[in-house]
Image (cartoon, rainbow, N blue to C red; front, side):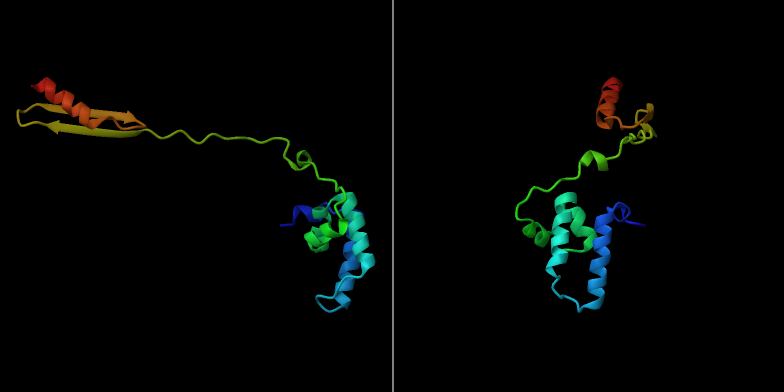
Length: 135
């Protein structure tokens, strides 16, 4: 899966990325970047923003931010990244369950309750009411 940022790298950042890759490929790891490369990155960060510049160039975000020296940096508008339509789908309704209860009392009386609902009845109250009727 291609990263969203890699498809939207502005051309000047892509060019500097190639220069940095060439420098990194011909120098040992952890070699300090030459000042002209840093200056180019700072100029791009002023134009495109720190994160949008640092990420594809694999530069330290805080290091680039310090080099900017508190200069105003444009921010990417959230609305340009946000989807234009979002669909909220409600959860499926609870399925109703069926329950059958049959009660046989010693007196020979019988009661059958068939319940179809998403919440069970208050069985204790129903039984109490039935016993009261049976006396």
